[in-house]
Length: 603
Ligand SMILES: Cc1cc2nc3c(=O)[nH]c(=O)nc-3n(C[C@H](O)[C@H](O)[C@H](O)COP(=O)(O)OP(=O)(O)OC[C@H]3O[C@@H](n4cnc5c(N)ncnc54)[C@H](O)[C@@H]3O)c2cc1C
Image 1 (cartoon, rainbow, N blue to C red):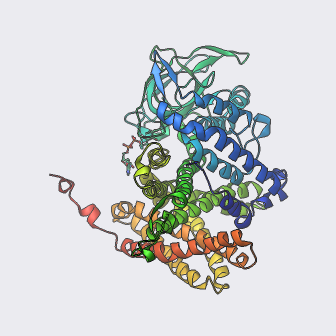
Image 2 (image 1 turned 90 degrees about the vertical axis):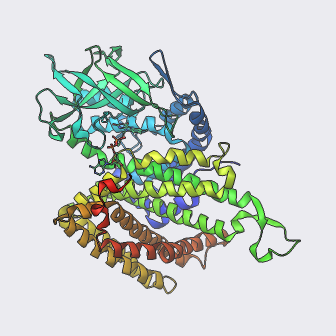
Image 3 (image 1 turned 90 degrees about the horizontal axis):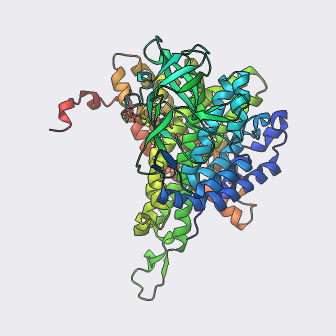
C-alpha cells in the first residue's frame, strides 16, 4: 500500500478558504507570499516529504542510532535527506533571509511542517532543534555570537540541541545541578550531566551547538539562579573553523519506544575539566530565555502530534477504500452478495469520521495559532497585536496538550482500522502510534500544560485572552445562525461556549481558594473540555465556509464541502454532549481525587 502523509485538499481549504492566509501578502513583510507562491512552496515541501523523508522513515525506525567507541551513528538514509533539506533552505522557514532564513509566514511553515513531521518526525527533530538553538542565538546573542553561530545554524551546517533535563531535574528544571565556573577570559567552565538530549550527538554535521542550562557558582537556588550557555561540541577557532574537541562526551543512547532514528543522548560536560561555554543572554535569566522560546517549541511538538495523526488518518482512509472484507450489512443474508471495501461498514465509517473530525480540528487549530503569530507581526496597531499575542499565550497549552493527547488516540484508531495488519511492522500505522507517544511527554508533559492553562493562562491579563477567544467563537456562531442548515449546530455550540465560560470562572475561583488542590486535580480534564469546545468552534467555522459552496461546486468538490458540514455535525452531535456532561462534573470539583488516601491505591 502506498503510504501518504496529509490531505492536500484540506490543507488548501484551511489555508486559503478558511483563514485566507494569502491576505498576509498585503503586508510588506510577506509581500512575496501570495497564493501562487504559497502553493508552490507547499508543492515543493510535499515533493521532498514524499520522495525523500518518507522512504527514510522506516529505515530510521529499523536501523536506529548506535554508539560505538564514543562515536554516534544515525540512520544512513538521514544523511541524504538532511543535505536536501538544508539545500532547500527548510531549516529556518520563517526567519530573517540575511541569516539563511526564508522569511515565510508561520502559517505556511505550519502546512509544510505537517508534511515533514508526518513523513519522518525522527529526522525532522535534527533540523527542528537546530532551528530552536539558532532562534535562541537570534533572540539573546551578542552581535559576535550571531556572526559566529547564526548562519551556520539556520543553514544546517552546524546542528543544535536543547540541554535542560537531568536525572533529578525533569518537569522541575529548577532542580538542575550542572555548574558554570567563571574563567578569566569571560568564558565559563561547564561541569555536569544532561540526559534525554534529542540529537545530542550524531554523525550528520561537523559541529553541534548545545544551549545548556546551568547554574553559575554562587547563584541562587531554583529557577532564579539558572543561566543559559552556548557549548559547542568542537571549539570554534577565531576564523570560524572547527577546533579542538570541547570535552562534551556522549555517555549513552536511550533504547526507546519510538522515534528510533533520533539519537536521545546522555551527555557529560566537562568530565575531564575542559569544557568551555559562553553565556547567552544575561546571567541568571536562562529560564526567562527558555520561556520566550517555549511558545515556539510547544507549537512544534503540537505539530509533531498532529503530523502523526494526519498521516495515520490518511493511511486509514486509503486502506479502508482498498481492503475488501465482509458483505454489506443490508445484504448479510444474501449468499450471492459480493464482499465490499471496509469503508462501507458503518463501524469503520464511524471510526474514520471520528479520526477526520479530530484531524480536521487539529489542522485548523495549528494553522490558526500559527496565523496569530503572523498577525502579531503585521498588526495595524498595538491593541490588535496584544489581542493576537494573548490568543497565542492562551492557545499554546491547548495546542501542545490537547492536540498531542488526541493525536495518540487518532493513531490508536489508525491501527484499529487496519485490523491485524495495523499491528504488523510492514504497515506504517504501528510506527506512527509508537512515535506519537513521546509528544505528550516532552517539552513539558501534558499534565504541566494543563497546569499552565489553569494556573497562568486563564487569568492572564485579567482573563482578556480567554474572553477574546469566546468572542471569536461567538462571531462564528452568529454567522452560522444565519444559515438554516447550520442553525441547529450553532445553537448547540453556543450552549457549550456559555458553559465553558461558567466552568472557567468556577475553575479559576476554585484555584484561588482553599480548594486549590481540587482545582489542579482536574486541570487536565479542564484542558480537555477547553480543547473540545475550541475544536467544535473550528468545525463550525469550516462548515460556515463550506455550506454556501455545496450547491455550485463540481461533484468532487461538492463532496468535500459536504464532508465539512457532516464532520461538524458529527463532532457537535456526538463529542460535544459528552463535553457538556464533563463540564457539569467539573463544576462539582470531583473531590474524590484529593480525598483518596495514598495507601488506597494498591495494597
Ligand atoms: C525521547 C525523549 C526526548 C527528549 N528530548 C529532550 C531534549 O532534547 N532536551 C531536554 O532537555 N529534555 C528532553 N527530554 C526530557 C523530557 O522533556 C522530560 O522527560 C520531561 O520533561 C518529563 O520529565 P521527567 O521524565 O523527569 O518526568 P517527571 O518530571 O518525573 O514526571 C513524571 C510524571 O509526574 C508528573 N509531574 C511531575 N511534576 C509535576 C507537578 N509539579 N505537578 C503535576 N504533575 C507533575 C508529570 O506530568 C509526569 O506524568 C526528552 C525525553 C525523551 C523521553
